[in-house]
Amino acid sequence: METIVSALGQSCGYADEQDGRLYHNTRPVQGEEFRAENTGSVEFEFHTGNVHHPFRPDYLILIGLRVDHDRQARTRIAEGAHAVYLLTEDDLEILQQPSSISGFPSSFTRGDGIARKTHPHQVLRQTTDRWYLRFNSHTTKGVDDRSQQAAENLIAALESVSEDIELTPGDIVVVDNHCAAHGRTPFAPRYDGIDRWLKRSFAISGAPAWARWNNQTVFPHCLELIDSL
Ligand SMILES: O=C(O)CCC(=O)C(=O)O
Image (cartoon, rainbow, N blue to C red; front, side, top):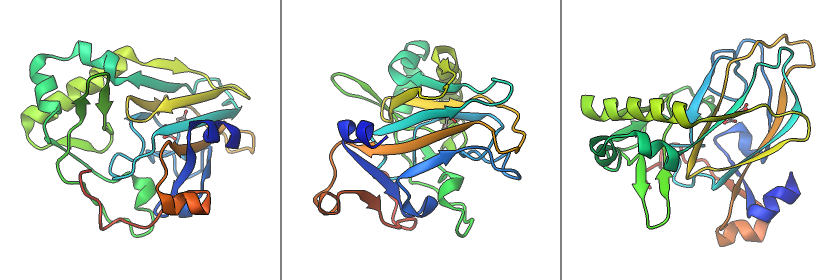
């Protein structure tokens, strides 16, 4: 994992999530079935990593260690640049305006459980060479009915273009977190010690100097400071 991350940039973690750990276990935890997190087992819908955060990771890295018992679980990856072809001009215009608000992922609010939200932000942004995507199907909501409809149309488009992959031991997936959403199909854990298991890490390609001095980046607690960067 470290070799892959260093080829992409530098590991990053978040003090508000898993105490800033840089490498995460993605495996089902009994009692957390319904959490939209890497401990759950119901559908984990399309999302870009840490949608609420001003320093969203550039890359998500997943390594397969063990498949689920029934071999039902698939990692889902849907590229924004493919999804936009399925949206109307009207949807694209609305999604490029600051017309959506995202709730913080529940993995960031375990400490106090307070439901926090971003300011209105763009979901799509077109630059000369790419479409940027910032969206979480679980938590991103349009500020009005028309924006909400556009968000729902985006979910349907992501669904249509998704590539679903079974991560078997040793398989590695690197997702560009600004261009593609990812998720996971539901599966049935048994909690017998040999359930599905992945390793997950985030990387940023340009680390701030203070982080380079430490040779790692753990973004400090900032639950109260989030803005729509
Ligand atoms: O379990 C998977 O395949 C995907 C995990 C995921 O979506 C995440 O960690 O954000």
